[in-house]
Length: 149
Image 1 (cartoon, rainbow, N blue to C red):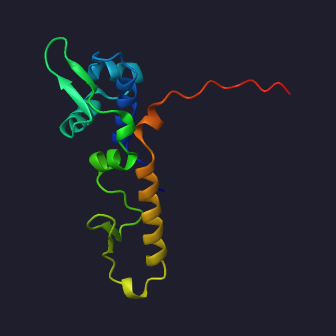
Image 2 (image 1 turned 90 degrees about the horizontal axis):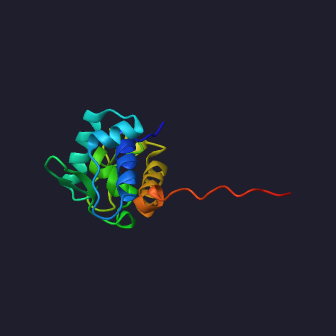
Image 3 (image 1 turned 180 degrees about the vertical axis):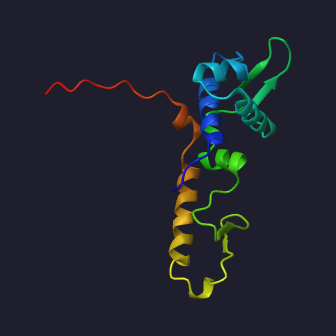
């Protein structure tokens, strides 16, 4: 089954929290970890990765912490997953080369009945993840409407 790792899940949780803070406000890794009951050490590593690519800003000091450094609408889910986990691969044999190209490293590629469909599915998955922004994910869900039938 295709699933995102905990690192990506924790990144989404942290960035969701940071995106809701008042402009200029900070949140520490420990504060976020305690608030959402996630391991502090893993969250700290995730936040460091996010800071290294400029998605969040790290402020040092006794009153330091993290804040969003980018507009969540400008970060795609594909970009975020790529930073934390590397390229998304639907199957072991599908590896991304340059840009939109994929390469099959399978030894039976010439006779493989699923290579072409897997590559097409890989491109669709990549396109879909690129179309979903972090802003869409961190946006609070609309309140349920009552159905008065």
